[in-house]
Amino acid sequence: MPDTLILEFAEGSVDDFNAVNAILGLDFGSGSGDWPAGLRHIQAGTTDSGGLVVIENWDTREQQEAFMHSRLGPALAQAEVPAPSRVEWFSGLGSHTP
Image 1: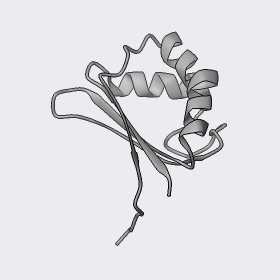
Image 2: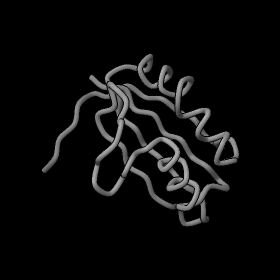
Image 3: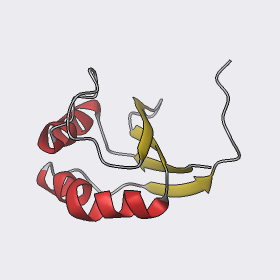
Image 4: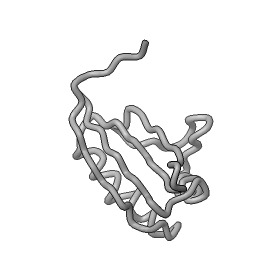
């Protein structure tokens, strides 16, 4: 089963999300770009308190960690996005789309 990562940015914004994706060369709307191997699904949105949450489903944690070290971490730094206030992994039991 895939592993899921929750990244919550208490001070993050949609502008931050878009800036990081632009640096990475990813078009979240159309799905075009150089997406990392092992990423199955990504979902992002704002919270009621004004923060940002990104949920990623990966084949393995190792693939996400490799992406974080090689591309995502540097892109977050370049966009000057504050560190996430929450980083949490959980292993999937399965999924279903009704």
